[in-house]
Length: 353
Ligand code: F6P
Image (tube, rainbow, N blue to C red):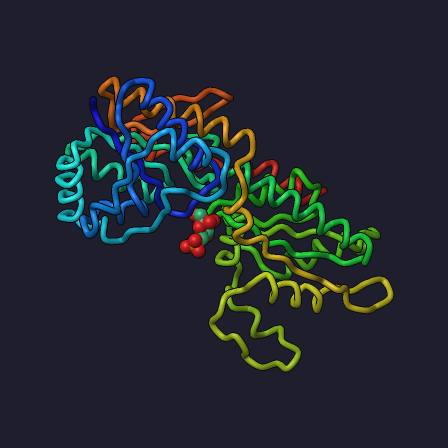
């Protein structure tokens, strides 16, 4: 009976547990045994092998399939960037009779998978990150769930914004990728969206747009901001110029949703000459800690099944993705070099409505 291993790495994402369950079910069907590695690549550092490798069976896995978070736990392991650490990890895996590893995570985790392959350990990657920032696939585990969480949040915010005639700034996650923000804004009919891919922007640009909505009688605009867009604001620490005291408070600090809402308030005017009451919400980790949506769970199951089949067939160095509804696998090096796509046309159109 051959043994394979699975780990989850980087930020947790809804669907990771579903994928691990599918891996366990298919491994059992194909008469392979499965080890779960605790806390991502940390579990391969050899510090505590008795605890870092967990035998995964139907008994301890069937109930986790639709749960949030990752049962195997996760980490961002900087030590794993070191060549000697990578070589030792492969030695450790061989001592445990492991013949292949499935890595579930984002681009940093895929770099770890590449390192394992380079050291002779067959590896398959499953894209697990809410950010959707892996260009070779149209979907990563957790992205759809995160968007659904954000859409629910924005719908609720828009309801209370309408009741009070208040504009609202909503910050969503995604690191340097604006996909969560763009999809959320599109699905909710939000008036303004700011994504890092669109490049530099200023508070004056946005204030002008917000003012044009106020002038048209819409006092409850939603401004959806991808967290990575704060770094693209110019100058990035403009906040200091806009305090009512004229002082350089927060000098050198970046913009935040809270600060941005107060700046928007000061730069815009309601028809009666008063400031609009601009509020803010940071959706935050609720995006990562949700139970997987049907789309994410279905992709996780298909990806888990495929990963085991690939290892069983002696295939390595591949990552799994989904395009136009079809689950496929791709060479890991090629996948990591795929060009980023951003729907600029949709972005510009939304912002011009
Ligand atoms: O990569 C997933 C992600 O949730 C990003 O959207 C976010 O910027 C980051 O992780 C947060 O990381 P941490 O869990 O280390 O705070």
